[in-house]
Amino acid sequence: MNHQPIGIFDSGVGGLSILREIRNLLPHEDLHYFADQAHVPYGARSLEEVRGYCEEITSFLLRQGAKLIVVACNTASAASLYSLRNRFPDLLFVGMEPAVKPAAELSLNGVVGVLATPATFQGELFASVVERFAEGVTVLPQTIPNLVERIEVGEIDTPETRDILSRAIQPLLDSGADTLVLGCTHYPFIIPILQELAGENVKVINPSPAIARQTLRLITSNNLLASKNESGEVVCYTSADPQSLTTMLPLVDLASAKILRVKWHGGSIELID
Ligand code: DGL
Image (cartoon, rainbow, N blue to C red):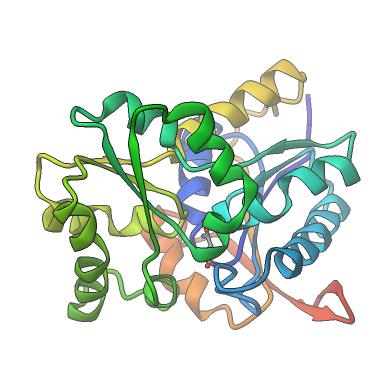
């Protein structure tokens, strides 16, 4: 029987899309979610800066007893997964990479659009998945300026959000993309609008369930499953105003999750509450 929590982090509320899937698959696990909202969005920052945040967040979650860390952010994974594995060699990590592989398999015409942040496209991880999995497929990278900021404040279906999204995907549709990859964990929240704007013939790939399955696999194969009968506790930490988490948690059926505030202090994280 294991009592340690699973640590999950993102720049903000995006990783809640992953938390929801993990919660569904592993309802008895305690989940500790860290939203680094003092620094969101990560996507416009340098990979080096993001890497520094990720290393400290991982240390913080370890101090809370985490047995495995889910880097529930494509940008953070692109910036830091490699260095996190080096720096914490005994810790289990689940990271994200743009789901180019399933997209390349599903696309009928071989034209795939990837929606992600500028930093994700800069990282070596993106170049490597394209090289490994997209032979003979046209992969079109596309950023969506300002969308993460709208989702952070809970503006999921507003005229502005629709406009931002529509402007971003139009060039992909014009180029014939029949498959779109969600390469940022904030984006699953706008799937219904995206599907509506792109049309029902365009396939949208959401990697969140696969990340939850990978978490289950790692926890099981390392004998770290919590064998409790009651459901696990969800604790959220934010490095900024809790309002955004309060708005978004009900959307993932976790309105009652505990929210604790933390602050960055000279490069390290301290609990306030
Ligand atoms: N949710 C993030 C991702 O998956 C980061 C968004 C941001 O902070 O720019 O890339």
